[in-house]
Image (cartoon, rainbow, N blue to C red; front, side, top):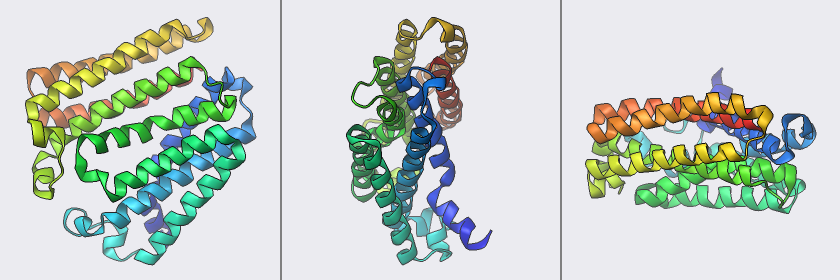
Length: 284
């Protein structure tokens, strides 16, 4: 695919697509159901999400260029497939486009999009090596598409279920980020990244990750009280799979907090987050 393929890899477009789906789910929750969603606003919201994700990932590579020369020599900027000037231009254009489209959707969506941009750029510039604060920013930006989509559909009158789904996603993503610190411990120690595993030890990180994942499970169960009766069966079936996966990862981490167990848990939590998003979609 040549230059286009290099730009797509730089932008990590697959993350934007996944975030756009989460935004669509948020829109459906905010509108009170999939059939109540205004499609043109959903399309604009998805475009905002993709643009913001692209901009943040591009600037991540810009700020991380020197580290990537050692740790990720196949990245487009390192290989020279995309120039630094081209990357900065793409990142700036994407963030500006996302901001302009978000403003057209109303004050609440714009503020949430601005929060994602500000925290994401803070992570790229300064917080990546901070450990837990950086983990929290990544988790926040993972969860915000649900809240953003709900705001697009309902303005400031966001349903409680949307807040609950956003918080559930935040806790799950934060647990996964702490877990990844166990997997990446050796490289993080060399790079000076102050993860929980690096500063508090692997056993502590495993316990914290387990607690966060189980807190997400608890909130997903609490959401049953807010899911409409027509969607209850589908939500229960899908969220049961999600919760079982999170509970399994939590149990294995508490029994054995080594790198191999953490790596398996990292892959399992990714699957759990996907099925969790499907559960949220079913509940809309």
